[in-house]
Image (cartoon, rainbow, N blue to C red; front, side):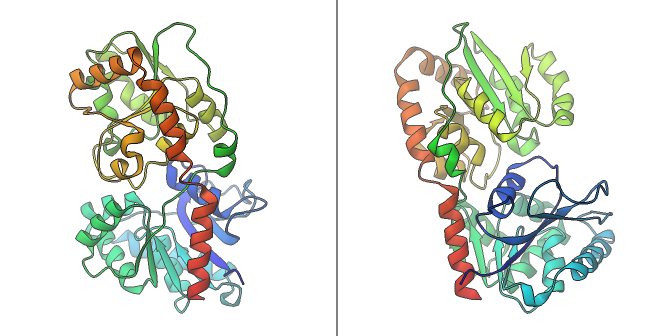
Length: 361
């Protein structure tokens, strides 16, 4: 028997980010890997979701601090109670140890087994927001199992919640169809290194480092795939640094995979813990070498299949780019990248989560 799942990510359905993509990959679609009642927020009250298998809740007032946080959780709980029948659910998948969806689901179905899936933003927000730290610790105490994608995440979790028990390591994954049929690689018509940054342009992703990191590098073009409002905020710094950037927009996944195949290196200048670095793994599946800051999480996931790079040192960045361009390193990294990505099929993550849920229900 496969346990019937209820899960909730309290972000608007159109939100950017790896956690949203992972959520959709696992729980939504016409044939989801994990059949579930999956919920996100209807931020503009548009009604039914355009994504098969995804239900939208029209709840306003999202916040993460008191006094508004308690009222927000209550509103989420009421919305869930209207649509969730306890008899139709076997296990809860809590998509964060923090934020409003977790306490709302626990209040709505307090007697159901729970699996808490830890994302990097949980730990970052718990470190800086006392109310979210309280939610994290409450969730850790109540969860029947706590799933982390890397050992680095488990270590950081235990610094915030020393009594965390029942921690299970299940790496996230990337779509199996990408591993089976990545887009064909296309060579540069200009002979210049085509560098790519893909993802959110938030401080923890190291976006501001790009302007200094490429200061002494030569013979390259830089493309950025990121949310429009975040790129607009970064544009003045890019201009001051004299960087001519090709902005790609916030690309749908198939278009992003094509962009990976059209570039020579992905830059990941993250400043702090990464849960796992799914964007890097998707790039590797497309045969794209990755230059990454060896922060916890990334060094565990990427290891020797990518090129550790000190993005605070422009000379180190430039030296690694030159080495990548003039040696056989690029071919070696492309082969290593594909082999590394193949270790993380999303179907394996889904099967492990389903088996864990069956053991609890």
